[in-house]
Length: 351
Image 1 (cartoon, helix red, strand yellow):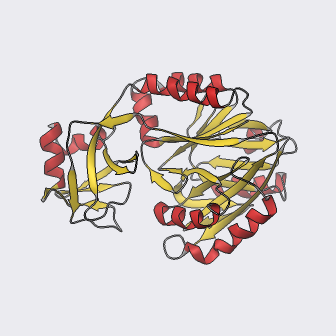
Image 2 (cartoon, helix red, strand yellow):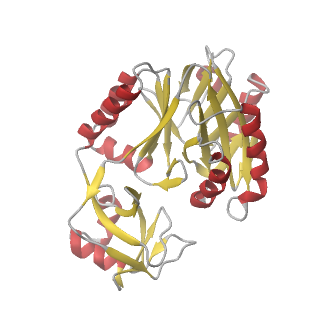
């Protein structure tokens, strides 16, 4: 298979798809004001081609911040695309769509991946999707878009998760997750006074969450929102750590980008040597896949901000381009199989 990336910083869709012929699966990344027009125009240009889209920045070796980016797979894949609606209420109501699509693609763990874009309530959406994917052991990579809207096959959806099931006829697929943080000290916190709907942590070890965070890191209220780039929370999940970013200060509580429940055990994380970690990720992918057709990734908005502040973003994209054709989305949360994570990079590699 092959991967196409086209872009227009000015939001000109015709410019972004220039040279794209016979795509077999398309992903659209647009801006808030042009998203709906771009979705309709894309469907007219490539009718009946499976497609999904969201509002967000995209990249290959360059970032598209406010225009439009298009990623397409061609020459050796088969795909379907669809939506599960009402993710805030009952996405399982629509799971039959995915089960039927899995039959159409007839994929396996070795050669098929699910790519999804969500409007929110990610943990619930991923749990629902996993009930279908785990029947075949199919992996998932995706993220949250902006603006509360996504698209599938030329149709706009709100309160939904859209997905594409992509089968690689030229070899294997494999998903990866990159974490650039490690544990800080031996801090362990029991969360309480949480609000699951608003992703709020009220208290840690019985003390106000904001006070605990500030006393350890010696930061003001205003500094908390940037300190989370260096020191997010972590939730241990087996042998893995799920990163939990702080969204805002809410009185003496902390609102996060990921749900925390009463009695969850949290740790504090600190930023590691992200340049060395990136190089190790690239080495691991090269070991697993000596020959690569494409890499599609989702990078967290907070990673983008951190890398940009440290003048590393452009270097990062150049480093990743060593893998070959690399393109992706800057998301508001990342999906890795059945997990919703923050401040991470997830990707799928096609042989």
